[in-house]
Amino acid sequence: MAKQKFVGEFEINASKAMLFPYLSTASGLSQWFADDVNIDSFNKTLIFILDGEERVARIESLKNNQYVKFEFVNEDDGDDQDFMEFRLEINELTQSVFIKVTEYTETDDLDESHQIWENLLSNLKEIIGA
Image (cartoon, rainbow, N blue to C red; front, side):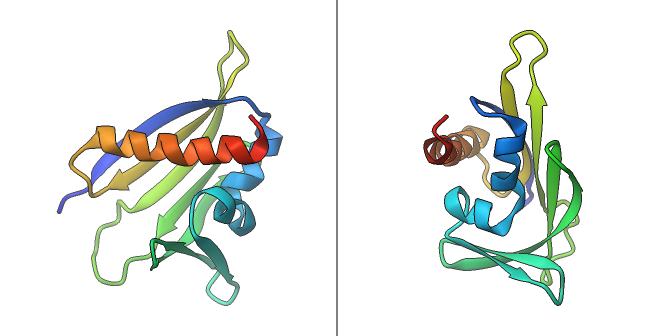
């Protein structure tokens, strides 16, 4: 199945400095995003455990308190568009912080992807009290 690009922006009432560790570290991601996230120091990768399945990713790029991009390592397919990016943005007028999520998904229904991310980020908001 061909992957579709999903981009969603979600407002969150917290500072970039407070949010960034939840988006960029194994311990932060395991609290709201995945069932567990482990670090493979030898291969310099993160192992995301989602619904009993492992997905291996490496941090492709990172700028502290700005963005992090994970590129998933797929041995079985040659699809180079398999990444997930979290970008923290500030609305200049309201000074509100937004998390911009970009990923390639196998779902045909981008509204469903939006709902999934809405639920995941609701979990994050609960954890940080936003």
